[in-house]
Image (cartoon, one colour):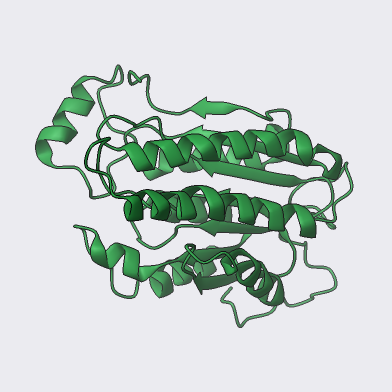
Amino acid sequence: MTINEQPSDPATAPARPVALITGVGRSIGIGAGIARQLAASGWDIAFTYWTPYDRRMEWGAEDGAAASIARELEEAGARTAAIEADLTGPDAPIRIFDEAEQRLGPVTALVLSHAESVDSGLLDTTVEAFDRHFAVNTRASWLLIREYGLRFRGQPGSKPGEPGASAGAGRIVALTSDHTVGNLPYGASKGALDRITLAAAHELAHLGVTANVVNPGPVDTGWMNDELRDAIAQGTPLGRLGTPQDTAHLVDFLCSPQGQWVNGQLLKSNGGAAS
């Protein structure tokens, strides 16, 4: 079903909950993998992307990625809303939620997979880079979680995929990293994100919302060279790198009724790779 098609009988069609996923700008990225998995599990998908970020990274922007990802999700039965958003702006979360709600309805699950990530260490990180990392990875995440909490109107008890799915089925999942050496602003801003998300597990519990952090470990989405790829695979007990699908399966579980007892946790999904 495409975004413009309607069920044959809207009155009897089962409700699909809405997931808002940030950082879905590249078809091989973790965000896109999560979007595909949740769409296959019965969610409608709003997602954000920011092409200028990819353009300034060494992998470059993927032309038409947002439209291509949206088509894939629609083919899986999801209604979609692709939203281009610069998360350095403090008003971006309000605009994102406004557009997602107008196009798809209330958001049941918020998945934070966006990131500003530019390598630099203690001695060579600039104030500008430090501030930009915290604006995107930390402040924007806090504001997105806050906006979600302000708008969520669930009642404890129902499950994702059931009629009235927004009630008691709230989910927040944030992706993090434990990388710090040579990656100071990224690692520090992600560490702050962890604390904000884990606080939400307690402060939003009265809404029927769970909040967890997932560390996906080393996932090659085009940023690794052959030497690094081989070294990480050899240092991982399972002998391979992570994939977007590995992360997507865990996020899917956390967003499902079966995952509702997991709350306030920082979960490592890294194949046993050393920290």
